[in-house]
Amino acid sequence: MIRVAELYAELRMHASHEWTMSMLGRSLVVYARCDELATAACQSMSIWRTPALEAGFKPDEVCVVELCSRAAFQINTAGLTASRTFHHPNMGTFVVYELDDGSAVVQPGRGVVLCSTTGEMVWLVDDALLAGERDRWPNLTDLATVITAEILRRGGRFLAHAGGVGHRGRCLLLTGESGSGKTTLTVRKVIEGWDFYGDDMVIVGRDPDGRWRVHPFWRPVHLTPDTLKLLGGLRVQSTNCTISNKVQCDIAELVPVIRPAPGLIEAVFCLRPGWHPEMPQLLSKADALSTLGATFLSGFNSHTAEHDLDNLLEFLTAMPVYQASWSTGSQAVDLFLGDRKAHADER
Image 1 (cartoon, rainbow, N blue to C red):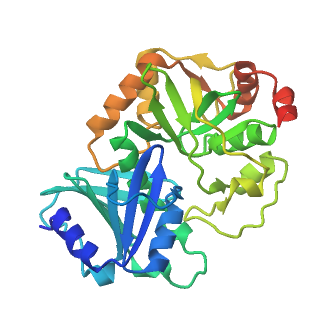
Image 2 (image 1 turned 180 degrees about the vertical axis):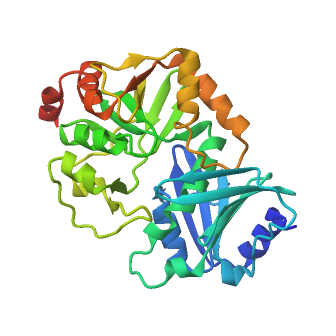
């Protein structure tokens, strides 16, 4: 069975390109043999290149990215039992395997991310993902999310499967199953003037004083034809489509936005399709756990479900959760966070 640390050391010796980046206070160095691959990988991780660091600087995290063919590597799953499998409506299926010195997250046909128990990460990319397109980084965002989630976990944060909108540093998270209206409601409120934190995934973490904050996680927005109609017939220039035939575009194509500062989370709205209450209904802790357990946790990590459950239980201890729908949720967001016209005018 492959050992992640040994594979990392071998590939690192041949790497000639180095990028240093930061993510929420943690530093990451990405090594690669190919500059084009390194550039595409870094762009896909929603993290930013930082100025040159002083000599002797030791990064928090290290990762080497390589094409599968050049790494001469294939996951041999014979005799291995998947520790977990999860499916994302826009990205497809991911399978996690336990290895001797870490774990592997496999996205069939696209690549694999390996994380060692000693901290090294290896990202192997299928050759076809860099062929035939000028802007290749969107092809890498799926597995880039796995690396992002791993770095966040090591820093005490996690990715939540939710949209996020805010006003004056106070935020609401909007979660629910695929098709429940997360993107529709999120984009609608952003068009009306609210801050945008994400439409499908956001970063959640707790301050030293115990308060929970949401950090923006800007990735391409995925819009169905029905969503575009509900939002007043929005037109987008992008022609990129996902495996579920959704139009993929940047939020800036829809409305002028500024990346907001982290905001305090006031509540979570769990959107339920086909349910039309006059106002959202507060859920008991037991019902909230059952509801969010199926929708809120992103699944994008290399660890077991027990780790996800610990995060969720800590979060629910402090956070009210309401059942809502995308139609009544719009009015409830206004009531929770203030007058929308005043906020739009402040922009």
